[in-house]
Length: 304
Image (tube, rainbow, N blue to C red):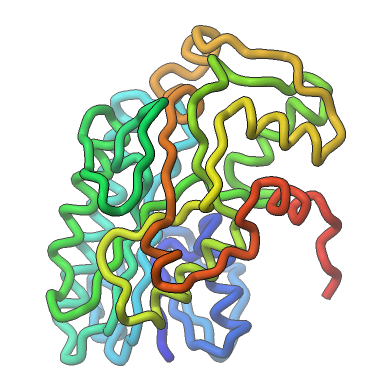
């Protein structure tokens, strides 16, 4: 099986590529980063977005496409950075759609990254794939345009819009920064602590992507989130328990807003999101509870 991964050098993409290669697939990674220094393999190739635009025929024979490309959200949200965040997502979809539509044989399935920000934020509501999208802030507006852009993909390919929550990884992404205060003994709730945090272990999101590729009944929006979201305070208490650190140093919301500006919505606002579609189609989470997920991250990595 030939699989294209756009954004294959990012947090989820890198883990996905390693998993696919381990399972025996042939993988082609499309990335904007320089290609020098990347590990080569008979079943792994890299190509740039410019090469994609100039030679789309190189994608001929592709069975599945996973597009995870997009500028990181972990930066101060100035007018310029917000434009980069939006345009990087829209352009990757547009360039990929243009290339795929030229192919004689279209891919069977396209998995397009999205985000649980599609549902907006709430302290009281519970969201699943049947919940309507809400365009009420910067992130939800980005998601709305991102998902609408995916309509340009070939209509005869099965399209999945993977709405990704907080991805927990040992070394990369947001979690190492979230864990840091606890390591120094200053962990605690952020803001009210009542805001919901929807999350997923890195291994589970990789497994879910592969499951979506092979489960032909799955189509449309899919929430990449654990079945057991927690409030910020509950999340922090679990981190403290697993890492044997105190949970006491509350950080006022106004201070977070002052420090990081509009990006503070990532930690001060939230949504309780459930993976209804994945569960209904038989997907089993290896790490459904946060304690299990954190214990896995805290344990020494296996030596190869």
